Image (cartoon, rainbow, N blue to C red; front, top):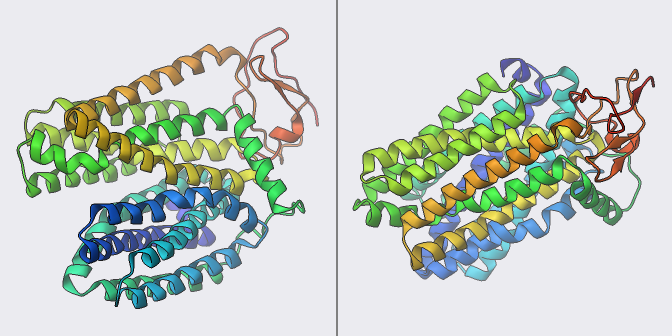
Length: 449
């Protein structure tokens, strides 16, 4: 991890990515407090979260496809300056809040924030892959992301309590001005795609790439389903603490602290094991989350429930970054931003579905049943995915071949009797897979380039 941070360009990228996450949490918590204090309505607060976290998923792929032609430094400079302006407008709007206006501004902020994360992730591949430091860099990003997901909400609550909503929004605007200056003066970032196709055509090509790619498609689909299950418990954890455990606000805080501690621990573990096979890490980290949910579903008191929360947090601290890394290592360089945009959109949209499912299960049955369904669902997906992976082991798809390894060329790649990829579809990806060893018509053709 330290070797990746020794690269000046990535060090700035990591700082920008981490502070962007901090700004996003400051905005999320502060605006939720503003809307609820103004309306005393859970429905209004839900509308805010839909505007800021769900609706942007419909726009992020489009914006990412359009932004990929610009130099990354100019793109992030513009994004962060727009966010600073939006928070300036929110400062003014907070003086006499009108919820529809707050939701509209939150929508634009959420869209830009998610697209900025996608662009930063794609730039990370371009900066670190030539140095062979992609996994180490992702470990560093994940540690910063995890730390901000814990520190951000706590800091926002502390600042709002000690000052005011408008002061915190103004501080957030200032944070994005600093981010804009940092990223706008960062050298060594990608200069943008050379693809001259119109953005709509590039968007369609990105969607087709995700759908047809034999590694990206199952990863994206599986993670989408998992995100629904992962987020089912988020809105009902307070109900679980008070009704299932017969606790109060302290019990709720203890569970959140336990989960947060697990997330940090999991992030630290990933910094040590990132060199391990990614399929193994994906399966292990996801199973740990499922085990945590199952433990919480049967825990009779706060102590074992907190222990289960720590366990789930450990898996949570590893799982997301492992999946992101696996996708990045399978995707060719000119598709990184587009695929990252689609993946970020899914990550933005699926929690909204999970919130609804978890709330309905809790209302109809109980919080324990919601945790049980989430845990069982996670484990079923892991074992189903593992079984499919094993069944295709002898005809595993070759989808990643270094463009700079001119001694290798792939004439055609049978995809487990599903389709055939030409060299154009696999060239320029960041890593070389382990080629299958077998005789017969299913063997990958590899020759001199």
